[in-house]
Amino acid sequence: MDAQAFLKQRLLCVAVIEHADDAVPLAEALLAGGLKGIEVTFRTAGASAAIARIRQALPTMQVGAGTLLSADQVKQAVDAGAQFGVSPGLSEAVLNAARSANLPLFPGVLTPTEVARALELGCKHLKFFPAEAAGGVNLLQTLAGPFGHTGVKFVPSGGITAANLPHYLALPQVAAVGGSWMAERKLVALKAWSQITALTAGALHVVSQTQVK
Image (cartoon, rainbow, N blue to C red; front, side, top):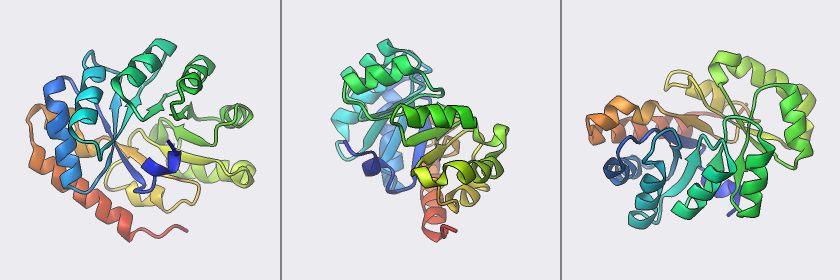
């Protein structure tokens, strides 16, 4: 699957799903708001089941597995039907497992050394995490200096909100933005599907109104 397929909306919902029964209603709420991409993080025991349920019920949803920290988790994600993977760090074991399974992977980077190593490993779409805590837009602009000509693109996440979303989207080196504010744990726990739909629609409106500099 081409990485661009799930980046074209420039927005990805990063979701922590505690109970697999919430997976499909959550994905339906995102779709109702216009968003077709979700990253289900492997931070809960029900992540695999959540991915499998969404894939079965909603074939138009592009479903990824996040927080992949081991080759075993990559296998679980692939078995569940994940269409792409995301890792918070640059693990060659995770990257090799993903490549063996033909799973597009966004490894996580933060420093120039990590970006350079990722490029050496043939990765040009990179998760930038934790975005805000590390310096956010300013750091991404700085990294664009030595790496801009390489074609590297970033998917920042971590601390991004509706308020600072436009600042990230305006950067030409940002392929898409990952955010959890659209579907925070408390909203999912409350089954606040209509609120999630509204937040998603609002975020996509920001995307449509933001010009890349």
